[in-house]
Length: 307
Image (cartoon, rainbow, N blue to C red):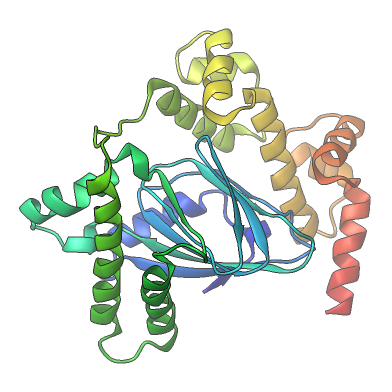
C-alpha cells in the first residue's frame, strides 16, 4: 500500500493497530513517498505493533525516544512496541521508505505461551532494543536485508502461501533480534514511565480537542497533575511543552485542510483548527512550515496542475 502522510487520518495508528489485532493476517507493509508538496514529517506516535523500516531512497532523520538516527538508502531500522518515534527526510529530493508493521502475536501465534515467554518477551521487554539501526556496512546487514527483501517481495506478489513464507521470514528476523537481546547484559523489564503514560494521555486529549479553546489547565487536568508538572512531563518525554505540541498539531491539521478544502478561506481554516486570530495563525504557520498559508496553498495548487 502507499499512503500520503499529509492526508493521514489523525487516528491512523490507533485504527491500524485495532485492524491488525482483529485480522487473520496481522502484517501491514506500507510504502511512504515523501514529496515536496507534503509537510516533511511523520508526527510523534507510538503503537502496540513492532516496526521494521527499510530506506528505499534518500536519507531520513528518525527519532525514537531519546535516540536520534541518520538513516541512508538501504539501512534497516527496527522500532519496538510502544516506542515514541517520528521521522522526517534529511534532503529535498524525493525520499521513500518502506515500513513493515507486525503485531507481535503473529511472531509465534496465539496459545503458545511458553514460546512467547521464551522468545518474544525478551525482545519486547529489552531496554536495549527500543530501536536497532542496521547500516549497510554492518556485518549483519546481508542477513537482515535478505529477510526484509523477502517480506517486501512476498507481500507485493502475494503468491499462494505467501502468508506462511512471510511468517518464516519474520521468524528469521526475530531470531536476529532475540540474539541481540540475549547478548545484552540488561534484560530488565521495559515499563512505561509515569511521564510517558501521562504524556500519551495528554497527547490523546490534545488530538481530540485541538479544535477547541484548549488551555494548559485543560491539558493538565486531563492527566490530573499541576500545570508545571504537565510541562515537565512533556519536556522529559517529547522535549517540547504541551503548548508547542498543540501548536504543531494544529498546524499539521491546517495543512491537511488547506489541501482538502480549496474553497475555504484561510480564516475559516484557522478557525477550524482552534485559532481565533488569523494573523496569529499566519505567524505560527510560517514558523513551522516556513511559508504563509496562502503561499502553501498556491504551491500545492501549482504542483497539482503540473501533475
